[in-house]
Every structure is written in structure tokens, then in C-alpha cells.
Image 1 (cartoon, rainbow, N blue to C red):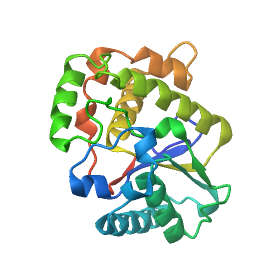
Image 2 (cartoon, one colour; image 1 turned 90 degrees about the vertical axis):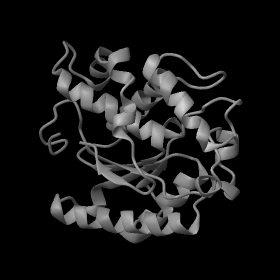
Image 3 (tube, one colour; image 1 turned 60 degrees about the horizontal axis):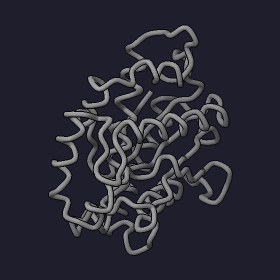
Amino acid sequence: MGSGYDDQSFLKNRYWILRHGKSIPNERGLIVSSLENGILEEYQLASDGVHQARLAGESFLKATKTFDFDLKNVRICYSPFSRTKHTAKVVASVLDIPFEGPQCKVMKDIRERFFGSSYELQSHDKYPDIWAMDEKDPFMQPEGGESVADVVTRLTRALAVMESEFEKCTVLVVSHGDPLQILQTIINAAMKHGTTPENDLISRIDAIRIPSVLSQHRKFALNTGELRRLV
């Protein structure tokens, strides 16, 4: 995908992504996707998830040497859900970055995808129903929930904020399974698409905001605690 800001004219920063560690909802097989429930402490990381977050932090620390970037230029952007906040906090501790300091930023727009009240606090077994609907029409919303296209809108907004606030930084985005696989989908397609007349982030993403692209997000699925280089 290229090495980041040094060879991608439409991005000022390098990006890495991290799905939160195994959470208490993961252990219990529950869908917790509303902001109201997601921020509750009872839905933070399970003990296995804390271990996964620590390992991810150690992997990211090794990457600073492999890819030659300075920890002073690292920014951690995380979803406000308790499981992502907990993950980001563990990673910041491993990196020796003050969690309450300027290098860590909570961002509402990278929160979990809301699957709708009919799925909320229901079994994980219902996920395949949603993903089948996504594949058929990524612009279709689960009842009361967010479509893939809805998530693209707020992820694009979040990226625009990161690109405006940071320059030549390495940004670690700590988020959730669906948002991160959707993020990979749009960035991958935007980079392959080539230039647009404006050649900026938003116009590139707008150009690939089509069903045949957005319906494929499951190809980029991550495990809990999985760290990946985005660009």
C-alpha cells in the first residue's frame, strides 16, 4: 500500500489500525453497539483483551524501529467506547505516552457501528444477517441502525479531522471490527482509484463510494487485538 505520508500525496500522515482487545461483550457473545451502552465500564476489556492490547502495544513499539518513526510523532485516536478506551490506555502505557496528554485523542466518529435497537444486546450470532444485507446493499440500514455508507460518512469526517490536526505523524486508530474493515475498504479503493480533479481525501472517497466497493468490507476483517498498517 505504500509507506505512508512520504509517498501518498492525499495523506499527510501514516496510519495504523488496531481493533480493541477481547471485550466482556465478546466473552458473553453480546452485540454492544450503541454509544449509550458502549461507554459503560461493565463492557470494557476482558482479562484476555488486556493481554492482547499489551501485545499490540509491544508490536507497535517494534514497528517504530522497523519503520523508523519517532514516538514523539505518534498520535493515538480512539473510540469513546469503554473497550476501545481501555485498549488505547494499555497501548499508551506500553509506549510510555501519557493517556491524558495531547498525543491521545478520543473521537466519537470512529465509534462502533450502531446495528439498531433490534440487534442491541442480542447474540453475536446475528452478525451474519447484517453482513449478508451489507453485501446485497451497503446503503441499506438495519432497522434503526447504520448502513456501511453511513459509517463511511463519519469515518471520512474523522480522517479529515486527523489530516487537518496532524502532519507527518504516525496515527494509531483504535476502533472496532466493522468501522476498521470499512476504513480499510475505502482507503484501499481510494488509493487504487488514482487521482481525482481535486485529488484530496474527501473527493477520492466520494469517487469510490459505490455498492461494488462498500459491499466488500468483510474481506478486511480483523481479530480482536489485531494491529495492522493502513497506509
